[in-house]
Length: 368
Image 1: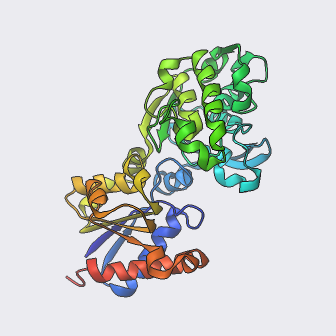
Image 2: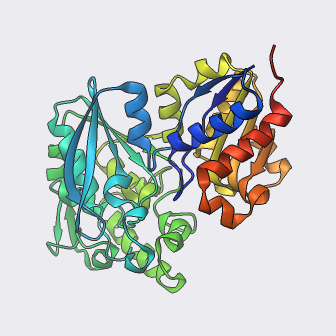
């Protein structure tokens, strides 16, 4: 039996590659004759560069950029052919700051702009920016400033959304000139707009540390940025990705693509699914947010097009069987339900391997 193993990261515990290896280890214990094809995945968030480097090759250009709080953090640009890839989470990731230091009202995406500038300077024709897993919520104002955009007052773009409410004017012309001649692509993990009830602030602000009473204030600040630049783009799909970095890239003439589709093409997921008998996917929390733009839904779509069943392994499963089947997933199995929360977090690779071994009992046909 041929099994394609295509999980996302298990946030905070396992990278996508580690998750794929753990699933494979457990599966082999139960079905050693099965042929396993490991295809770690990403939707544009953390791990985006690792997955693409493994599939596309190329060279990594290391550098130091500004983190969400202004401190320096290591990051890289992947150059493969005439395309450079950037992972926004490397510069603005939520994981870069412990909970007690998270301050999304003052956090800046300037480091992502520095990465884009470095990517442009490699001389490529296209720059793809993976968006997801960020701890900033500044509408991409920091990115614009790092690329040369100016504002009145002069520092308003650089200090997070806290400074945007006082904006009097914004000139993105210098930033447009900085990226002239380069195709920009925003590979997003979500399709939310920048503003409103389903926008970046109201949907994702709380998980970044924004208190409920501050959500209207921050949304209003981003609205001010949109009014002075292009409010129509603020309502576009994906403009709210990564705290509004999608909006900034659209302002610079970029186009938006679902990150999972870009990665699936890069790793030839359709071809590999067609050669498999079963497709496995997974992520840390399989919930309602998994339905749009996330790895499990994207992998399930590819599996369905290849007429192959898809099964999910997750840290926790928070959707019912009816909902998961609308995504194209036959069954989903919970790590927490199998070994308990303490064990799941105590030794994630071993726990995920144990879950995979159990799933193989049901889904592996054994030797053909």
